[in-house]
Structures are given as C-alpha cells and as structure tokens.
Amino acid sequence: MKKRGQLVLKPTIELVIAITVFLLFIYVGKTWGNAEVFQKARAAKETALIIDAMYASDGNSYITYPVNISKFSIKFSKDNINVYKVTPDPTAFTYYFVPLGSYALNKELIKPENLILARLGKEVQILDKEPNLNAVIYDEVSTKSTITDKKIVLDIEQGTLNDPKKLELAKLIIEALKLQIPGAYLTSSILQKGISGRQATQADLLLTIKIGSYDDQRNVIKAYYPIGGEENKKRKLASLIINQLLILNPDGANAIPTEQFISSMTSDLAVLIEIGNINSETSQDMINSKPTEIASAIYNAVKGYYR
Image (cartoon, rainbow, N blue to C red):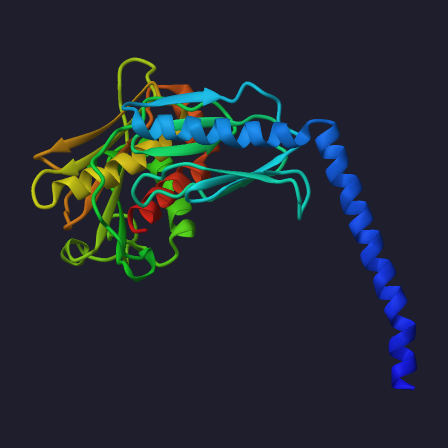
C-alpha cells in the first residue's frame, strides 16, 4: 500500500514541478522580451555608481534618479543594490558599490515613486523627498555602544524655564522625548521629584532643550556642545542631532562648540539643543504640531551615535 501511494503521488509531484518550471520560463521570457531585465540591471548599476561617486566626494549633495522605476522594488544592503519585481525574482539584478567605514544603507523601497540619493555629512542616505543641504559635517569617531544601558537625563535651559511661552513649547518636546526614551530621567527643574544637579553630572548623556529667540522670523536649529575632553565625540553627537532635525527645514543650522555651556549642569557628554524662534508664529506652529517628529529626530541621532 505504501509503494502504491508513492507511485500515485509521483506523477502529481512531477506535474507540479513541470508547471512551475514552465511558468518560470514564461516569466523569464517575458522579462527578457519587454527589456525589464535590462532596466533592472541599468537601475542597479547606475544607482551603485552614484553611491560610489557620493562617497568619493566632499560636501553635501543629492540627486534624483531620472528614470521612473516605480514598477520595481529596490533593496539596499551594506555593499550592494538588488533590483527586483517579485519575490523571489529569477531575473533580479544585483550590483555592488564600495561602502564607507561602518555606514550601512540597509533600506528597502517597494515600488518607489521617487528615488533620491543624498550625501549628508559623512553618510549617503536614501530619501523620498529632496533634503536640506545644511547638514553638518563631522569627523567619524568610534562610539560603539548601546543606548539601552545609558543613563540619559533631559533638562530645560534656564532662560526657557523663565519664559512661560518658551517653557510651554519646551515641555511638548520633553514629553515627546520621554515617550521615545522611557528610561530617561528628568531634572528637578522640570519635575519636582526629578534628579538633582549632582546626579545629572553623573549621567552618560545630558540633553537640554532651549527655545530660540530672534528679532526676525528665522527658524533656527542649533546644537551647542562644551569644549574640552573628547570634543570630537561631542561634535559628532551635536552634528547627528542637527542633521536629523533638518526635517524641520530650518533657515539656519549648526553645531557650535562653546566654553560656556548654557546649562546649570554638565555631564561628560552633553548637548544643548536650540529649536525654533519664539518670535516666529511659523516656528511656534512647527513645534506645536511636530513635537513627536522633533523627539524622534533627536532620539534617532542619539541611537545613531551609540550604534
């Protein structure tokens, strides 16, 4: 009985395999016939060459891929690009590029309407809209660690604390940051039962929020970091924060070393983040409507710093 059952199943299995192979030949034939194989190859090769050129160049730049490739999907890995239409795709095309340091693109776009490649600071990024080219460039230094075991303290700058309108906006950002970093501590200036200044100085990272104040309508983003110690690491974190906050399309952005760090407390690693302009309604609306986006940008920068 067992042998008879095997004999009955054998033709069925062979038929399934034959149909699969037949359909595969049809698919491959069609992709070759309508030139999709060549389109995949062209997209993978040209995109890889653009990334190589961007890694080899200085400064910030971006390019919008000029060919419509919305019928394909693209997977970016550490050192290659794979263009495909279905999964699995027997005619998918992979092309390699030379990665820079520890940076890894690791992104997958499913039938993208637009493909924008940008060199911002030290990194090449894959975007879906044109970037702000004010990104701050910094020297790459090793900061490999993990954010999960770090003591992070959130604070509000004294001048912002003393201004009710500024304080209201700063608290929106702090509250959103607390949701992004559940283990973060608040200082006693924000929360009555918060940690003291002495405890804050023992933190691995102190993030202080400041709302800017300018006579004109500029929407400015700045990140101040204290001079001394491992200054290149401090600049790296300040720069990462600025580059993430460029989603706010500021009129100016910069990472600034300062001897007088504007905070009542300092820790080994500290950044004061100045966001917006209290005298600009547009800037106020931005903070009121996007506290989560601002907090996510700061959190992604910190997470990127410790990767």
